[in-house]
Length: 479
Image (tube, rainbow, N blue to C red; front, side, top):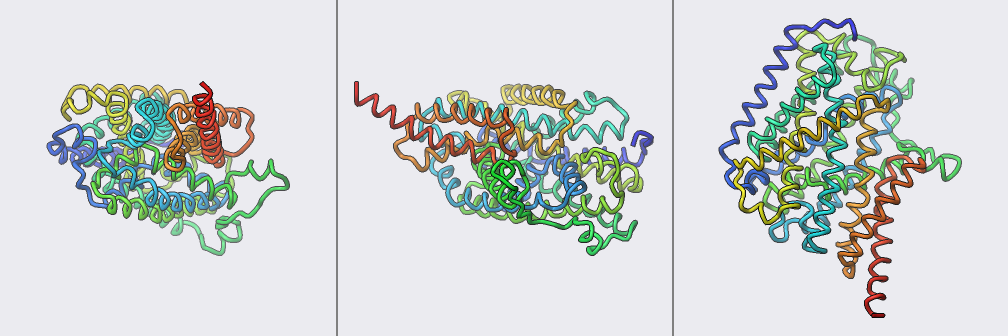
């Protein structure tokens, strides 16, 4: 890859693609009037568009680069996590979404305000902002990798370019513009992956039989380990992957503002439920495509000394014809821009509605306040991405681990409010803090794989929340 020469055709294709994205976004610029319209899309987006937008938003560069890399070094075991994603979304659609559509709920955390109080909502929002900044900092860095290799520039410059484009994209049309451009972008990056698979099959004698012989099509992993420690240490077993996927999806699609913001844009509970459940089935198919691509890359290259995150990039830059490689890289940028722009928008809306709710109704969608919030979060994402530049771990596992660190407490406090009617605000806040401390201990001493983090956080939150509530009740009665 170091000897790769920048091809003019590839650069032109990428530039034309980025221009098309921005032009499509500008189509929606005049439709956002109030701040609610800007962040919720006037609540008239069709379910199928939201379905594709959800998939595109969660399909960052991590999926495009790292998922094929996981299959290249192993097999299709990660698909067990995707099965869990589908099940988790069904649970969210059935039990979470009805709560969001009761009353005037502008963010996922407004439910916590109605159930517990403003302090719980603010703390949950701050945790969301912290998690999203760190996790999307990893995604921003991952997106800079191919840009650096293609243009021959340093990482900081590549990061700045991607961040600037993402900021402009997020500003043009609010959440409605982001959703509709996501629909376009999903088609681009899926086509890029499919084109790569076709070229590999036409270049080397790749067949299902050869993939089976090399153990590259294994999906279900029933290896439980020889003891309890080994059982929890393996992330991609049937139990670890499925349970981890279920709880990750419940938290990311039920307690994460970036996804809930898109679902609220439908304006209708049934429509939102349909969009979310459909995205669960579609995400399994998408992960299967990218994992299959990684298995095919193993037969194309064999076992070579390279980081797993770089194997697909190596193929794109060195083996795809000029123009086609530019199109595939444009697909990679599509996956990244969807997530980063949605992240900037959702963090801005969460800051405004959750931390400054009284001011939100007074602000117009063209206000300099919204512009300022977008700038602040874009800058923070840049600094976050610079922090992860020297990490040696696969970027997808870094991002998932970061999200899982705080998702357990967030999901736990949501479930506490839904399932335990006696829970109070003081008990909920204390449980959230206890869960964060507990999962920190698990990570510090490397007690389990990342797929178990959220379940552990949920259990700690629920148990401690109930105990704190009973203690507070006992203390109040004794006074």
